[in-house]
Image (tube, rainbow over all chains, first blue to last red):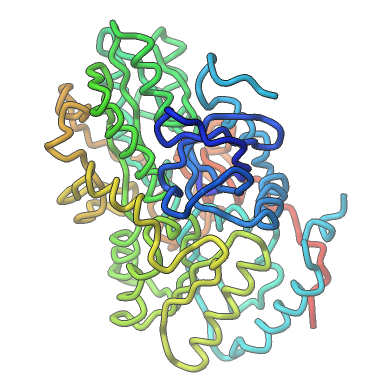
Length: 95
Length: 372
């Protein structure tokens, strides 16, 4: 639970309270960005995601390192399962 | 793939390991506790112990949310699941944690509506899609996860949703560290501070550990180099005989934490006067409950929860392992009755649990040449 998943903000969805579409290794999901809004989050920014919420803004370099770490720790499948699970079965479509 | 390739900067790793050897006083024995289960997992996975001199012990801390949850709370949560028209939701980590009469997945097999979710907002979504059912979210986690639960409860209230509640098991890290420092016979020289919990709470809440207890603490990232650098920082402090809070994970952790997250937690949660931790007993002000202003979303208010207390199986020594008194393999059940496939204790369930991490990686040895 401690290892967060990196993703890149694609679009901040207007009208949808505190939500953004985030690309996580090619899978697009709706993620809550309330906790990073104070940092003036914009499309193109990288964030660390934890249980469907962006927890902190990070650099692209750190995002790459983090994904590599998840791979090495054998958590990448669990991470992608988590990401695919966001939004239940009627979740946003992938790309 | 050779293990050595997995290190991002093998030369830097070797240099840092050499620096650790240089700084460590050969006449002294060091015990450093890594508080967070994510660090425990990384330490075993990367074989970091093999890069440390013999007189530095890494002691595994209590920072694995499913591991510290006493069995009675699992039984309580499952008792709610057993009531009519209830959908029990929890993160995947919870599903194989044993209760007295089975784990949540086994309850599902017996016909109860038990579902894995990956975000608390999805429990809320499920409630909206099933207006004739009650959706209960079994919330666990430290300060990393608590803000997400808080924001979900706030949203439920704003949207006027009536068939959703949270069985709140969120715990806080600081009282657990205090309990460890207060336990008799427990000698920890310094702490490797949790990474992602600190993105929320920041570094300030650790200051008493340095100021009042005289123990250095370094908030650390999860890469092998991060953890080794944190060990260097701790050794430097001990060598200079001073104790402060340092932030090695500055690329993610702001000193002041995440204000929005702290605000959401303060809005929805209040401190419980005490909470039971597996193996550590009752710790005062160590967990969160839902505030009165949100009581309609508090599963403990909406349902009759038996409040059971269950002692762990006698032979299992989860408590001693959690406190760092015993190493996982020293437990009588380790690798025999208790394995990741059939866990007796929660430490064998989660990949962040010391026993599962030790079991999965014990035979892996770091192939990085031992630096001289």
